[in-house]
Image (cartoon, rainbow, N blue to C red; front, side, top):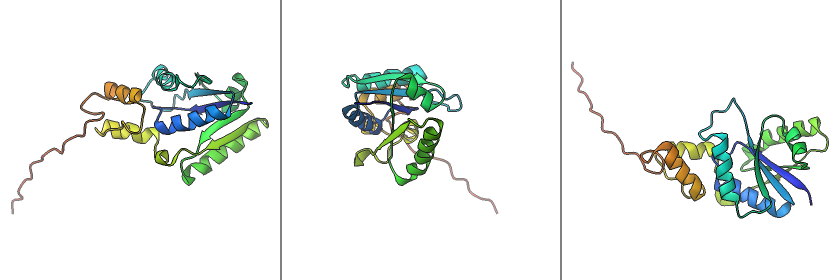
Length: 178
């Protein structure tokens, strides 16, 4: 059985990520969730926080390991002695980008294989950016993320932001003089 890596930013990890990861753990001997270190991205959670959340959410999956990487995915693949890169495809719009990345990885290293897993239907519209935005605007994300992530979002954004819908502010409408 092959070893795999599941690279991503995971800011934060969602139920969709966990759905992909749980199924990958059934297919591969080992799965290394590798949290990307990308200084060009401004993340809500630090690298250590993202890793801790993933560890907490995957503790029941004994063949899943959490680490980080900076650099090329093919280098990360070799670092962990893996043969396969796991990627999730939510919609057709994801395919073009993922296809280009897989072809480039294959060009950089002919041994690199990419396996795509589609999330279960209820997670096809989920992504971390949307989760962060909903939480920041006061919407509840509890059905989209594990409880530990929901709690950390509330802690990070404050109780008036994460999970508590904002109220419309009344504005005074002025009268126009003629």
